[in-house]
Length: 382
Ligand code: AN7
Image (cartoon, helix red, strand yellow):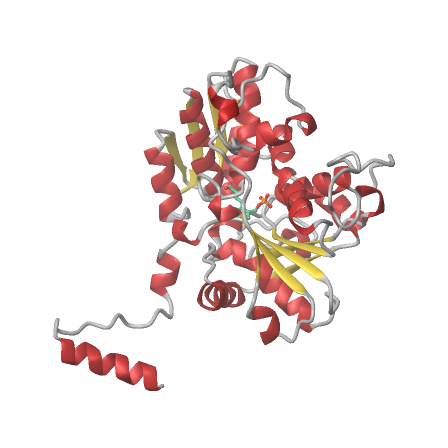
């Protein structure tokens, strides 16, 4: 007789189950999962034409993870390992998304979460998440970098596991996004563009691409040469990794720490990136680059993506596409190439930003057919 599970169609159960053989977890470590990963890679239809691009642009919509950001990929692995190692509490500093994710996975694991956030600079949706998931939320009179220093100190003496990206299990989980992209495209892209804060995610993606490409063996790491990919890992060339920062918070452009980072993209309001050194290695090895985008360009791109393609991301996430579009126009990203932009977080996390500046006045009318009809007619004629 078939077991219950065998008689059911395939059910995706999260990235630890999916990629276990490529993660440094003990065989008996029980996955703490919310079915994260497996996010859509959406090909943009309209925007490439508006910049005269003959290649393909895809967005990896990480905002569709269970807590609405890419952090869940790292958190499932970090919390799985923490619980396996006997930890009863996790702690992190956060600009918002890490705290939401840590709080959710701690809830799932039945352990405590402590999150340190910069006072008044966390998007409302993210704060609401951390509270809803039951974390102890501590607002610091300081910025992310101050909170991070505190967490590192506390981690030395207190019985808490740090789940910021300085925890290597975080990057191991986040590298799986690169695997998914390769599986979806049948090859790595030519360019992979990401927003950069601590630079953990760009480093994690490079780990993923490096493990998948040029593996030094004749066999495809995905399928032992039994898959239908157009090319196998042995002939893959990894992408150029391109990191975009917000202009007011761009230590990689300044070549040093930024002491008072400022940007509307609060998720990447980080002046002292924790993965500083590895990120420079990624840039060199992949022959990629760093660049910066102004807040205006970031917000304009966020709106363009939502209104022209139907994809709503948070401001920080839009930095990847904002930079890519500019570098296409500058000719730095070559015509005809395949570009992936990571959309790190969901637009719903930070609705204020859309409703605040430059939002069209809400139309208010009496509940009368004639009035609304006239309005429609005017719009339809326009
Ligand atoms: C939407 O939540 O650092 O370069 O504390 O939330 O890996 O740091 C968030 C970072 C990009 C930058 N996009 O990623 C935190 C935090 C979004 C983010 C980044 C973040 P990294």
